[in-house]
Amino acid sequence: MTLDFAHYGEERDFDATDEELGIFEELQGLVALKELPDELRLVSKSGNYLTAAVGEWDLARFKFTDRAKWIMYPSAEHSVKHKLTCVEDMHEFDDLLDASCERIKKFWDD
Figure (spheres, rainbow, N blue to C red):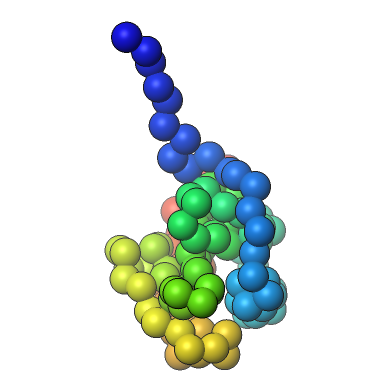
């Protein structure tokens, strides 16, 4: 009998597409004035998508490849993937970004 540990939620190495890097850069610009309690970081906690994280909070999760193009804001909605056709489509969901930022600030625990 062996004991196997899951690596769910651990940060991993990743290879982001140009569009994924573009989404992260847009997010950085959008949250720059929102006075979040920590800096925004691009991380991979899953092999299936990238995460824009603030501390331990997932501000946004996203994927932009040939086969899948979406963004979600888990702090504002639970597991709703919003389809994208281009990086600029993410601005259709700026209200969800605002809600996510407010939730993170409200429940931030240093």
